[in-house]
Amino acid sequence: MENNKLSVDQAVPKLYQKAREEGIVTVFDRYEAQQPQCGFGLSGLCCRHCVQGPCRIDPFGEGPQVGICGATAEVIVARNLLRQVAAGAAAHVDHAYDVLEVLEKIAEGAESYGIKDAEKLKQVAHTLGIATANKTEQEIVKEMCQVIYFDFANSSTAPMTYLKANSPKERLELWEKLGVLPRNPDREIREALHQTTMGMDADPVNLILKTLRLGLVDGFAGLKLATDLQDIIFGTPQPVVTEANLGVLKEDYVNIIVHGHVPLLSEKIVEWSRKLEEEAKKAGAKGINLAGICCTGNEVLMRQGVPLATNFLAQELAIVTGAVDLMVVDVQCIMPSLAEIAACYHTRLVTTMPIVKIPGAEHVPFNSETADTASQEIVRMAIASFQKRNPAKVYIPREKAKVVAGFSVEAIVKALAKLNPADPLKPLIDNIVSGNILGVVATVGCNNAKVKHDWFHIELVKELIKNNVLVVTTGCSAHALAKAGLMDPAAAELAGEGLRTVLTAIGTANDLGGPLPPVLHMGSCVDNSRIGDLVIAVANYLKVSPKDLPIAASAPEYQHEKALSIGTWAVAMGIMTHLGVIPPVLGSPKVTQILTQDAETLIGGKFYVETDPYKAAAGMIEHIKTKRALLNL
Ligand code: NFS
Ligand code: SF4
Image 1 (cartoon, helix red, strand yellow):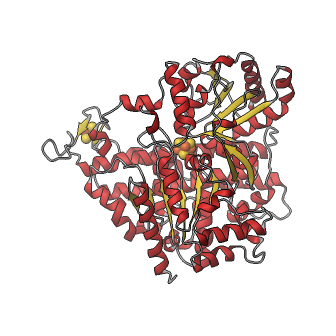
Image 2 (cartoon, helix red, strand yellow):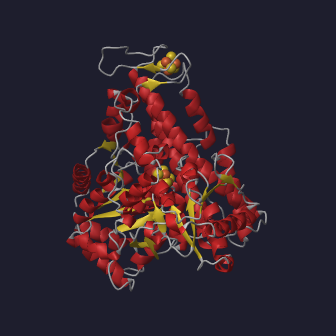
Image 3 (cartoon, protein in one colour):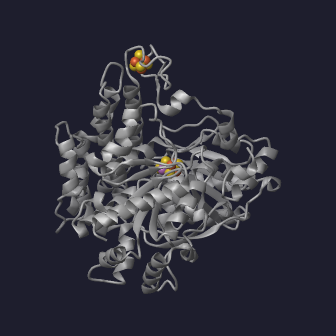
């Protein structure tokens, strides 16, 4: 691929060039090798749900219009989408469940983890209706685990407790009316797989309603549950100052990269990297330097100030620097190609989870029992690896940007309280009402090899902030914006005048000596629940539904099934959700129409597909203005 088409991140073409010279194939090359991609797959018109298939529907009406069993384009597309959303939800729920199991172990007295945020523990307990007075932390945790486990064991038709406890009444009533209230999350995922097997549901509308239900499973049993429990165990993020991009790697330090998603692993690697610093010095390094890739990078950035190395699409290039002594991974978004690339350098790739093994990587089993011993072992492996580094192969790009991050809802409220201690949300609302802030857009999700790396995220966001739209962000979108310098308070100068005034007022009230950055980093992809919490808080404050707010969400460069399930949750919440990559549904005009049009009347939110960042920004701004007008703003 031509160097200037790869990425707007300047570290990428340099490392890509290095990879080429060293004969290493990366995601960019493999993407080219896949061209042209199959039109049936792109439009969602291929079914492999039984072995009579694969069946394909001809979108141009000349070839077959039904599969061998008689399934139509509408059915095949709707079934495929439901399966993707169910898979995304499964990933997040499994993540949350892993954290839940550790929380239970803490209550039983396990010592590898503890409770860092007792306030959050109490707050979550209250939300679940658990009294906390005169109870020890362990007692509260035990009760909380019981309530949450009940959701996973529930065999009745009662809706999920965790969802009921955390949703606005108006939404609950609507979801009930539409029949999309999820019961036991595991059962919903199982049922979605069943419903989409051969000879099952042939009603696209029924399939889409189930998709919405799986979106709610994702939002509450996945995102919200994971974030809440992680905050309890590891602390709720507060503002941190750090840096982003591969320039954070250090030549004379042991460089360890954490990659994956669940902070159970990455937090322990942070802890042991700090504790074993002396051993690294004895081995000839100046110390241990940690950096993160993908969402676990966001987790340790938000709570520990660990710098971001890079995001999804450049994960291989981190290794191509030749300066990474060890990369340790847990689950999700880990390219299998990493092992082959690591083998070209001294880099050790370490897998840790029973469900993620990669031939060529070393495997160190990590769980709540082995957490400390395994982490020590991994950090020591990195120190040993440092001594084998080949300086001739090292190239660390200089690119890096200053990042101010750590904006949990709690941190945002705390910052706003400096302006109005009695009523912290009021300054935010007042500025929305006055038009200083036109509205709020959340940019989330991944990189996708189909899109010039980081380009859509950055162009879209620059356009939004210029028009006084406050941007909150998570996931690999947050990485992109961080690397582009948009989380540096200095970037406030790119914001429109109204937005800049607000950012400066909040920054000054908080003694920051300048404005807040125009883009607020709210965390990992599961932390999209923080955005959900903020939306609900503002809606409750104004006594309206989330669907009435001047807001939108966007996944400009998404690739993962998780992004589809998150997007479905956002739509179910009533939020217009932009997709910058065309989802595989265009093969069904009916499904496309429901998702992009009818959904709005049904539930208040809809998908908005636009592959041009400037048009997408304009579309979202127009949407925001419409919502403002409806609120008489
Ligand atoms: Ni979200 Fe995170 Fe990145 Fe996409 Fe992957 S890391 S959970 S899925 S690629 S944002
Ligand atoms: Fe073909 Fe129907 Fe089997 Fe799908 S389920 S592969 S459409 S026969």
